[in-house]
Length: 286
Image (tube, rainbow, N blue to C red; front, side, top):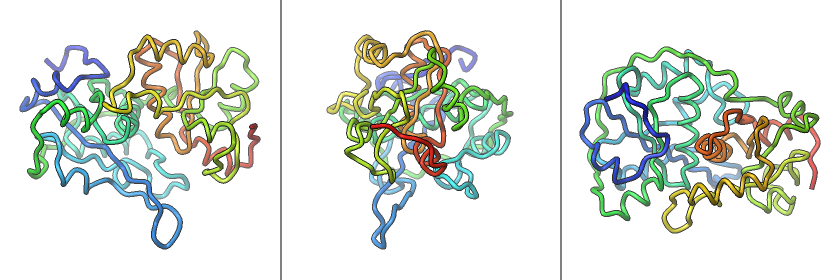
């Protein structure tokens, strides 16, 4: 069963039929980013959401503490490929397993984990369309049981260097008229009216396809692919290279995920995104 191709996007009905399979690993990937009482920003794995009720048999995937480099300057920077593979393997992910990822935030945390797994060559992984909201709305069971304990998986990293890019790659893309740069943040961020990352504006030449707008606001499921294809085409996504970015490499993975579903093969995520771009005092336009 695990040798068969796995769709990158699975439905709640599909997952309901798979519950209990010994090779299945299910994880809630949700993270809270919120204002801290003492000022600044607090970033924590959303254990409270999982504790209140989760998909039976699921665990929590700690994108903050376990799947990011604690010594990196920027939030959510992935560790080296071998260390990233070891972190995922410790959760029971590896050869002979299928992984389903979900969240409670328009799929962007799930796509972040999906993109990270793909970056080290692990492809039997899917995002649950609509996440926890869609699962519960369909009348599927919700559990408060403890997370299952899985034996460590065997996962050897096969890095895909094309999965991520840096500021140099973006600067080259700005000069390359065959490339398309897409800002996955809000329209307000794009036009400069929201300077939430310290400076107003967007990377020069970037188009705007907000990740939050990729989903139906009621169900949190992705909108029909034909609609999304037209939206990305309108933003300039064609046969050339595509770079997606956001504030810190999270929302950008949702845009990249959909572009992958649409058949674009040359899609990369600017992992440092605006935090890195602004930190390096690179130009923005409004």
